[in-house]
Length: 183
Image (tube, rainbow, N blue to C red):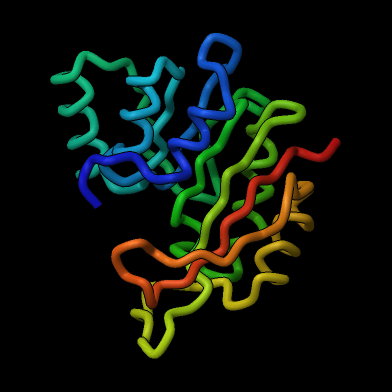
């Protein structure tokens, strides 16, 4: 993946003013590519990641770049965070890492930590054209299922759910949506 921010992180930065936005949480953010970049843009950034090696790597990079990023070692569906503390959640390519039986509970946990009217930027693998996915990936195969999961967790879509392809690996098809905490 490298260190270039995703299209999602760039959109978060375009649509949100760091001066008016509280915490932005990158959930399942690996070695901190998104969280560190968002901190560089002036956001109060949180990286939530279950892999301690990845968190250690993010910590070293944040220290080297003199960035203040909160690092939390946790895994969905249980986040050791206060309710209604986060303004924006970046759930970039994380939902398909969660077994199906925990997806809805995980989205409800994200709903819990978001402030009223908070925003969730969510992506998940849907399918791979003419390729087999590894058994460690739990894709959301249908667009309607992706939408229904978010609605069932209490979210309201801010626009249409989009089917997208990875720019470097075109057979990787994924769903992308922006959701608002529905009160």
